[in-house]
Image (cartoon, rainbow, N blue to C red; front, side, top):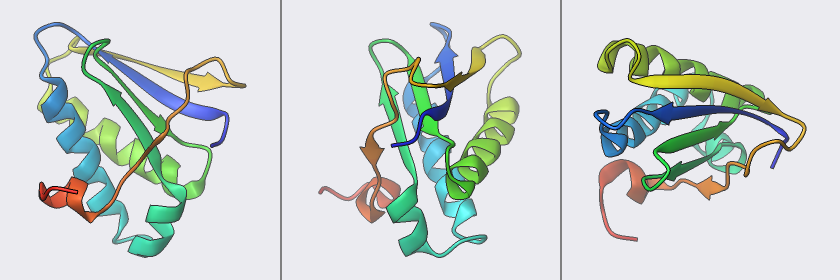
Length: 110
């Protein structure tokens, strides 16, 4: 993984599962810009319900697009102050490690 990520920390009242669904929507939207196989090879994210944090690897053009789309969706889905956003560079985060596949996007079991 690259060493450039965005990290969104969600407040207690925000639904982290809903936020992860927005990551999936961002990936689907990015499929309009890039091919699905290319996104599957280059796009990674991490969602931790316990810490209420989502990290998206933005070290590739594809990941940067997914991150930008996600932020646009999150800004519309959540109230002001529902999450904080920061950029991680140089390994100061835990790393976005979750690979996605079609099952993640359709809700089907892996």
